[in-house]
Length: 91
Image (cartoon, rainbow, N blue to C red):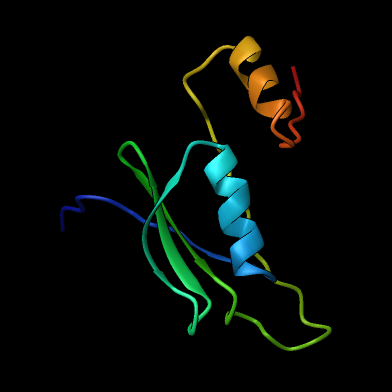
């Protein structure tokens, strides 16, 4: 089997707010269905799906972890920080 790409589906509590967050990171909406609470976003060759219907039950955590490895400098990340995105360096 040969894969051409892998697109994670991220559970979110508020799809519109999550879309706004990823847009600050440079993603653009490729497809969106507000009735479903779902969106597909793209940044270059990277894609992510956001879905607020995953784990909708109170008391059950939305479990998902994403690690973003941007090819950029820390000064570029500081610029993104001024848009309201929070970043932490472990170096």
